[in-house]
Image (cartoon, rainbow, N blue to C red; front, side, top):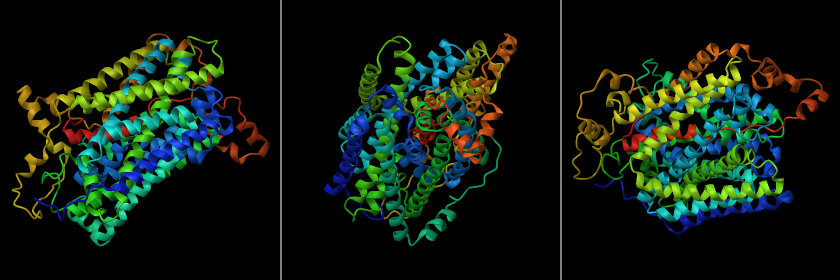
Length: 611
């Protein structure tokens, strides 16, 4: 059952290119360990001394959004479900505006290092501790999965040594995070974005040459129903429509950009609030470039295999192996280019994992170490920060080993991570946007938001939506030059989880399963956010929230918006604004949330554990 031709294998040059990417990343860490006197204080280590400028931070924000699951998952998403995924371009714009104009002004003004510091300032220590512990546990879990999942996919297609890659990437990440701190993380991200775009472009250019031009790829996609951009069906049960991507996607991604330690830690490290906002808007261009590249790769995948789907034909065992399969198929005559693509995928992993490690170190220092040991010197705190990076790096590698034993639970863990982002956005929005919200309301709202989003999320895991809600597009095998008997498409393409779920529970589907549990995975975060906000406001009003006096520094004010125009005022005022005493900006939750929700979804399709 051959594909158009046998695919290639990895050669020495591919390993050289991949190793080169790891070595350059490590060298950047060594450089920033000693440049400018090294990491003298914990502020230098965790926040880059708050002297970063917009462009490198913007590229870093883009890189940490891109895990290897995105590199491998988005093209296979487009291949199976069509180019409606590109509507996320509008979502990214809305998310960046929300983050820059609602969350950033408050975090930057307060000069915090961990976003959870805000929760104590606005509410109390109990609310802060809830956020901190949740963040640490989920980020370690998530990061192990981000290391392991792509290693498995690449190993099965390319033969790349699984544990060699897992350990190598974990060790290199930990090394440059520990040596160079946030500066090293940001500058390695800049390098890794270049590698990612180069990897994508090599695939797109070669596929266009083989298939006879971009126009042929677009025609094939159109004939196969892949150019399904404008599905305006308002039904919230359909997995991807214009509305689920715009509304649900905006809430989901805001949990990553707006209140995520990894992302917030980056833009707060900028030397002025103008640079911080600029970094977010420049990053938007990066997000669009990555989105266009990954959608084009997905369409190229379809054009190449529209009459002989490697997945249905059992060439690969999961959709996330389609991209490595395509690379070894079309680039086998160019030694080093398959290695470049693997470096591209792993650059995504490195940037995500390094973001995690740095954010974990920052949160642990600010929320757990400093409050209990206030007398520690800056030098000691800097050493502890580096020790934390090593510890969390080791834990993440250990988590990858554990992930290999978890099987289908991987998807449940990723889904869990996505579900918990919504209530956290709701909690921060409650503090920033609702002046009468109090700590009782915040705590009650958070619990209610978690309860509801876990209810719908876990229900969707146990009783996945019916196949027609997934809107999977048809895949064909009639062109395979083999005696392979293409079994019925639906049974081949439908993931075993569905049948096993109904067999195990042996129950008829109830209205609850067909409606509430079939909600599009993108709305999980929306539900969590809205329930947290609504219940939080209700409890706050009924417990005397309107009688409290809140410092306006903790709230979003109209001056925050008007200050955007300070740049057009006299030079003197601009300088005064830039040297604002609270240049130290806040950090937030794990940046991978957004990434993962997408990847969650993509990975979940792979194993059939649909959100």
